[in-house]
Length: 471
Image (cartoon, rainbow, N blue to C red; front, top):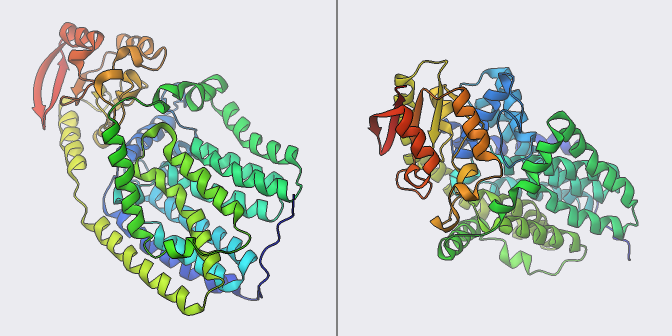
């Protein structure tokens, strides 16, 4: 296989990074300003906040609390809470800014090595301008995809420099942020083959952080919750129309942010095969499970940035300026959207959390039966079970119809663990926040019997019904 060679371009190392990093840091802060404007952006942040609080109290991931995700991001939340307290996500927002800055800097370094100093500056700025180009609930949230991106960029950066062990470790870290982060392995393998690199060293580098994380948690639980136990979620059941509309809708939103890029992507530039592979692998990651949530699309941005930068490296500087100006205008629109976006679901969660706090004592355990785990965090109450949403107990997720939602489609063993937890420590309050969804208690005999035997309806808040324990 022919060895790749970066496009030769003059580079002047003196003071390059001291001049570039401060503007990139400022731009990273500006593009993340809306993220500080509200306590939560989506339920994933709420899920992570509850997980981190439980871990800080001595809980163990995949035992005390479970999720179908690797442990890196819950650990980051836990570390942030240890520094600043669990009442605010401000420290997590700062980590997200740093993650975006690191991604931009790594892309700049990769572009500079291949196409010269000007391309390095272009890549760093272009990425940060594109990074907000989704619904604010997806772009501004400090969730899994944001923390995938530095690992994926680092993997390509290391592979481009033939540092195969480090490239593998970066792939492993991307996987530990979220499983789809491993998609970057495809272009890394391609570069390894092109440069005749040691595949064993790459594999060892990728496995080392993953094995360390498994040993730091529960190896069997880690394997189940991150790999083997996600088949039901990754398979499709539900409304095809809903899924297609969501996929096209989020793609259209991203297309607005990337409006200046299509002509550049059609431009023929040598040495981009690994970048196209990266884009294809990231697109496959977006489609995994056929859910097409907006935040999945963030993985497309680093390869899109580098492909556009490669084309601009062969065009006059004026073309680069026009591209950056057009993208900056789109970025401004998305930032304005982020500052003015409605907060309907968050207002509901706040009102519900206030009612939960009024109806229980701080030491009480509570069961919120719904898909908004942030209620626990906002109310300052401990979940009654290790399942923070109804999804793991019913296979419900966005886009599903009621055809494959129910107790029979739950994660194996979930209802046994649920019964054990609610029997040993009966929740002082059960909140039915299903509001007509397919996972409503009336469709689940076990939950319906629990409510009938021990609980009485107390009040209704925004359609959610609160039940207090009476025996």
